[in-house]
Image (cartoon, rainbow, N blue to C red; front, side, top):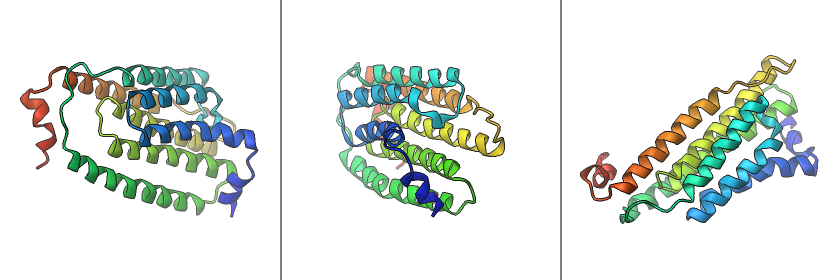
Amino acid sequence: MHFLDAWLTLAPLDLARLAAPVAFLVLAVFMPGRVAARLSALGVAAALPFLRELGAPSAVVAGWVLLWLGIAWQAGLPPAGSRRSGARLHGLESGTIGLLLGPALLVLIVAAVARLDVDVEAARRTSYGALLVCLGLLHLMLRRHVVRAATAFAAMGLGLQVLDGAVASTVAPGGVPATGAPLLGCALAVALAVRIGRTRDAVPGSPWVNDAHDLHD
């Protein structure tokens, strides 16, 4: 029951502080379009300074804020080339898989966390990090847009940062801060996603772009 207590005993202000990034990520997952993508990224960036569960130094938190601001800038830009008609059937299939896989994975991780013999703070932070990772995975499978996949990678990286902070606080209760490794890896993934997406937008009709979705067949 300590897992339920970790969330039920939260003060309303703390609950709102934790719910804000999740709400903006849910907006990015289920609302298509550049406006929703930009608003969600800006909302996450604004909420991060209050997310103490990151357990990271202020420089790392500032790095996350800058990363999400960069995602908001890129996600709101119109495509450089003409939009190519995509394979909607494949999008429907991957979206269905994502809707089934994301919640199932979250339930499995939360069930595993609930069985751990940790205090309420560690249980809450671990389950929260798992939630962010699952939202990133769900976004990646539902919103099949290369540039906006940066949001998915950033959400997963943010979840890993929370998990890193939870592990650091458990191993060293004295308050050893989490490292910036998740931020570095996430920034590289975001940069690659944006670079690939902008290149594909700039050269529609090339064999590399047109055949990209068929390489798995």
